[in-house]
Length: 80
Picture 1: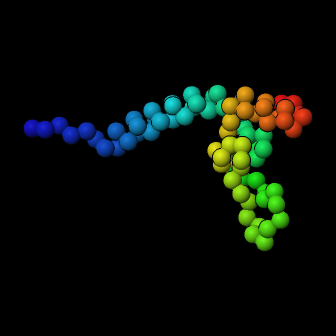
Picture 2: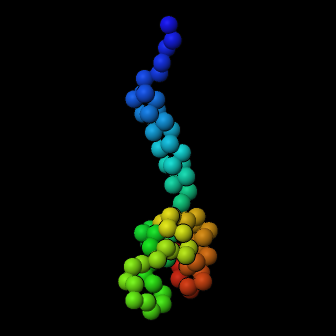
Picture 3: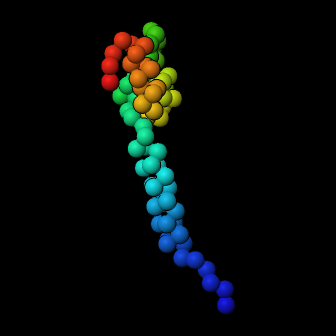
């Protein structure tokens, strides 16, 4: 007799482990100051296409490290 793992239990466990890793990573990240966590920004140049473009700071992730945020705000002359 061969024991087979219950796929629902395995999927649930994997999802929990992924959530733990993401929560640990997200705890160290902050919202991107350029796109304010959206991942997209308005086109910085005139274009007939009205769609927004990928944020150049976070590359559409919406989250950055505090150091990246401070560097961007310093470049803009703002504070966190």
